[in-house]
Length: 356
Image 1 (cartoon, rainbow, N blue to C red):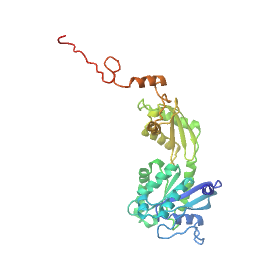
Image 2 (cartoon, one colour):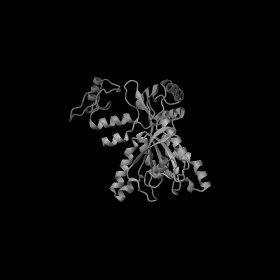
Image 3 (cartoon, one colour):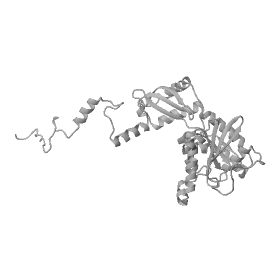
Image 4 (cartoon, one colour):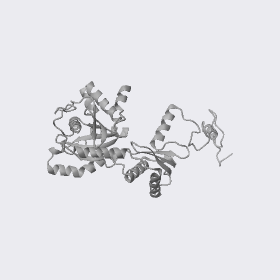
């Protein structure tokens, strides 16, 4: 495994690209066209054919595009897990796992779709692949292959509605770049690679603290309409690139909801034009340094299940001694008047009227 990681980690490449998609959408054909530069006299680098499943192992080729050194990886078609287990083919399962491992070494992923698919342009499996790309934090460009097989009217309608479809299916990537192409005819391939380089530049974007703080001021001005229970944003900066990651210091971070974090993320994406790649935002409490949102809740729930919750943990309202007194005061029921009731003892209340 170490040798494989060393081979995949190629520092000389300016951009590392992997082509993902369902079986028989034209991934290998696209890689051959890019590798040969459109010269049909050159031999194919990877095997192609009409039958799905010809590519088994990921194949990486080195090429140059507009002065940039690229590592382009062809991958096996990813099928749904249910179909994998039904076929019970260990090779199919192993190739899918190897393909997903290759994603972590890439910078940009080209998600290739089949325009001639009569069922839907984006299937559940495509959304599963996009979820894996999002988890790894990679940039993504959508390529709609076999567009030459569509009638002119159908292609025009698909190009008009594709942006809305992608925004609905892949909202975590913003306005994901979409390119209609025909790999077999070398049509739209250059435009696809141009979008790959643009997405790579966005994925590696860096912004100064002054720019981020200026945006934070605008967000706070809009946020005054929200409830006072929402976090109060204090300071923000970019802590990493590839993908762009921002850290925001605030008070009441534990009360941050998912919608509040999405509101900040969408403002960052819109202001800095971070489309085609995930944007990560982490909130930190100014007093305790704890993470915000569902991460904090999940952390405390796991600690409670393991029995490792510490009294007087950072962020608790009462000091340890006060927590201990509060804990002891709740042991067992109390009689009316404040005295603790011993087992088997009951205090009878005297009636306020009637004979003595």
